Structures are given as C-alpha cells and as structure tokens.
Image (cartoon, rainbow, N blue to C red):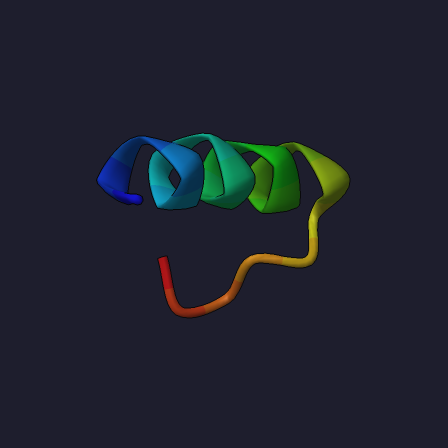
Length: 21
C-alpha cells in the first residue's frame, strides 16, 4: 500500500491539507 499512501499524500499536499508529509 506504499503507492496508495504516496499518491494520497500528494493529493493532500495539492489540497493544502497535508501537514506531516
């Protein structure tokens, strides 16, 4: 599931929600 987490993190970064990435 590393690939899923990777893309999910990118989605959060684009959305401006990712803080811990």
